[in-house]
Image (cartoon, rainbow, N blue to C red; front, side):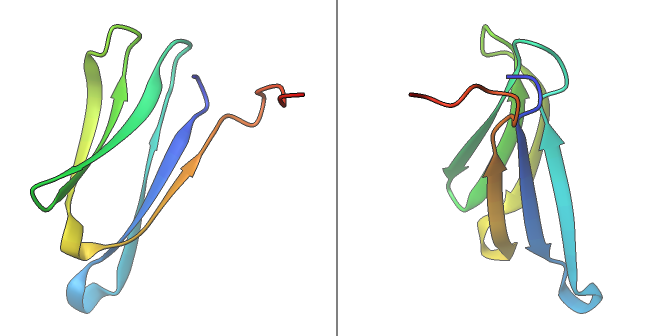
Length: 77
């Protein structure tokens, strides 16, 4: 959903930490996170599942991964 975002904080070695952000930029897109074979992959995908943009990080370097849903979504009752 447009506005979904994932923030990734990594250990950049001697440079300290770095923070990256992947955001669903258009309506109908979403952000998916997968973790396989020591690699964390964060992708913005279309409704059909086609990746538009992908960020890959070594799992051993990831310090934090925060998924933030769209704040405009209506709360469930």
